[in-house]
Length: 375
Ligand SMILES: [Fe+2]
Ligand SMILES: [Fe+2]
Figure 1: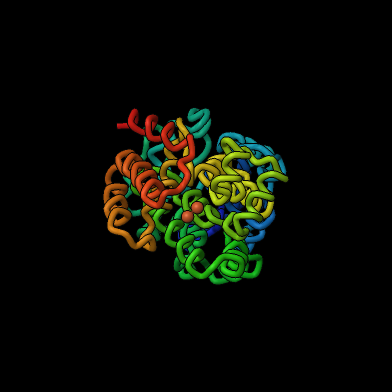
Figure 2: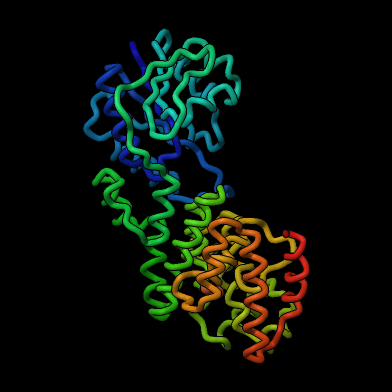
């Protein structure tokens, strides 16, 4: 008996997965294929769909593929499961089976770094699909067979980025999966609907601009583009209230607005960022602290902001809809040098606040001084 295992986050499953599975079936003719959606930590970047939806989408992915099924083993286990553990489980269940793992060539080079690589060399073979740009030399000691042809260079992270940023995504997914996502309004689709309703037209357009720029900066600078687009999508959701409503909300929920009482008196609008993080968690179900932190600090910032938080701060100030030349310049700088763009964004914000005669929050000068240490 020949058993093929295919693990992954499937968040969401896409055309690349489908093409790999179909080619694997043609080439290997397995007696049985198990698609194993991974358990994902809710506190890690790249917030996606709930586990039960990922299971349902994986089932739609394998529908029509003979002798293939989805196995919720890892999700039921409720913790991260390594390839060697899946292998042991498969061996326990299918004694004497010939075992194969299906992977993309982008994962191939990383194999020796996986947990217990010794076990991954013995008693299992690796069926590998070529993806463009990824090196495809088998690491030493692993039994590898390559599938013919190249496979679409789609990634779930990129798909999430597009979904959150309201960009084109439908053709990257199997039709049934796309329909499921629309029906369940996953990956921010529900948030899009709600924000389009409660924010002004300009504010919603700004939101999309920030989400797209944040995703672009994340791709350039090695951050999770999906998480960046999600932070961009939700960053101004606190703007649904007027200033008096913001002050009330921040007081009632005792939000950690720096110098809360004074801020709510002098410039209640500044509270919208902290309200946004609160709403992102409670209303939109975001659990990733990186995303929540970026939303909370996108307006005032704070010393020791993380690189991901600075990325959203810059994307907010420099999004294309801002329509002033400094924003355009900072956007160009940000594509090359995010730290430099951040320093300029901090200075620009302070300059405009002074020029308009607005109240300068004490955090402003603290962030300006700290930002200098980045250069
Ligand atoms: Fe904002
Ligand atoms: Fe904004």
